[in-house]
Image 1 (cartoon, rainbow, N blue to C red):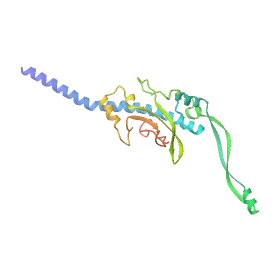
Image 2: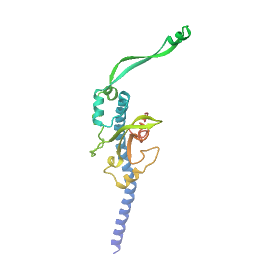
Image 3: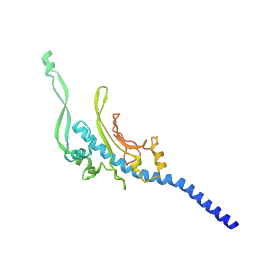
Image 4: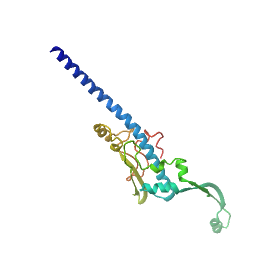
Length: 219
């Protein structure tokens, strides 16, 4: 009888030890998976942002359709210019006052064009898949929207691309995902989405980009 009790006690001790270990180890494992996947997702969002900024620079607006954005990258070109200072005779001043007066101007020379694709992605074709969430086992695309918002009676182009954290962390502990969705921190990705841009604010910043994906969020 004593042996049975001792055996049961050992089973309870081992079980409790396992539970304690799991309680400590699961969040550690979760964070490792999260950091690796977030870095990949944010790198992809940075590609989307780079493409969108090129589109806005050339066309004056952002694009909500991924297929059209890919076609833009394939075909669009930057106009290369050079600015130089010059001094010219102010004809209006001479006409008004009868004396010569010179004024400073800036002359913009067009030097040629450069491919958007080569400028942003060089020899890589990764932009063709930028709509796909880059996580093994996930068959999903980023949600993207674009339009304008009114600021001081001026329509300003905006865009946003995002994916839910629960999609990126699809195979992880549900309770840990719920906790992750509530994160509010300067050192992490806040809220339930990993995103770039905004449809309500004039911003092309990314959520948590300073801490994931390699380089800093300099936009």
